[in-house]
Image 1 (cartoon, rainbow, N blue to C red):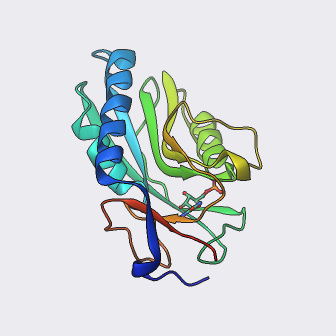
Image 2: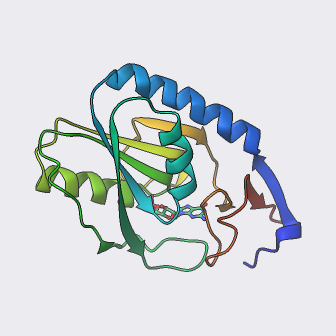
Length: 178
Ligand code: 5GP
């Protein structure tokens, strides 16, 4: 499948995304209330979401960035997750908030949660994803926080790419299959 910009339909507008992020941030501000949080952004897809989310969080916060990859085509994942770059400080006793773009099969989320549990004795580990594609789930995993449900569509924009492109869009779009 090829995706051209003029074929994209808006699924979530910039305004919808920003409104939902503020709601999520409000929930997190009450949950963590003054506790320090280490926000772990999963590159590259979650970068826009993580930046906008943390700007609305008011607890003491540090940001970390990790990079994973899963082999596959431009529009589907293979299911094999690879740690490309995970250099994290000591997270023992910390409140860890993992920030992802989308939970699809759930394999990346599972990999990350297992990684955190195996390597650290964190005070808390929460998983936050902008999008939740429940219909394609292969492992039993649910994000603690998520922005929007998505059905079985390949979406782009606002950090999510097609072949490296479209991360810079302010909205999330998809190509309607004809
Ligand atoms: P998983 O299948 O492991 O839950 O998802 C892993 C990754 O696949 C996501 O972090 C994201 O980078 C990519 N992915 C899954 N669904 C989509 C989608 O609809 N659009 C884009 N651009 N990437 C997706």
